[in-house]
Length: 130
Image (cartoon, rainbow, N blue to C red; front, side):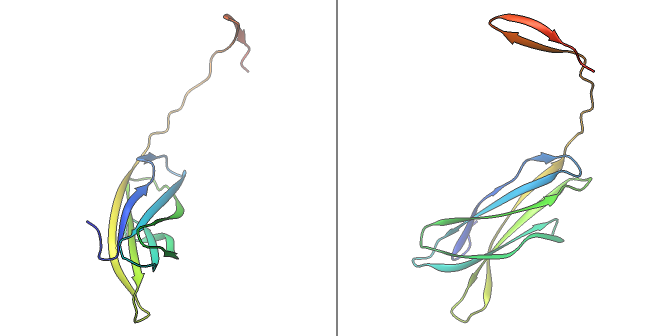
């Protein structure tokens, strides 16, 4: 559901990540108002840790802006919360829209490379692995 003046149209992040991995997040906010407005974005991990902290931008009417940040994946599933704010004529920031996206803890797949092959012109040849 959109806010009064802004709408978070997308939270772009992977659906899963491995613990310790850097997770890139983009939050796209659209200006729903008929004029340019000053918009701010906050991205929070599990309602605790801010990884996008009050980044602001003047967005023209009808346009969107991408706010980017990242966090280190903990050893558990997490929820990303995105919040949009607009600067009112009173000079204060007002909460307007929010959205969320879940990121599940990915599995580390361990293995061993036992064989590599090189193919050229339909001919294959093994490459030694050490």
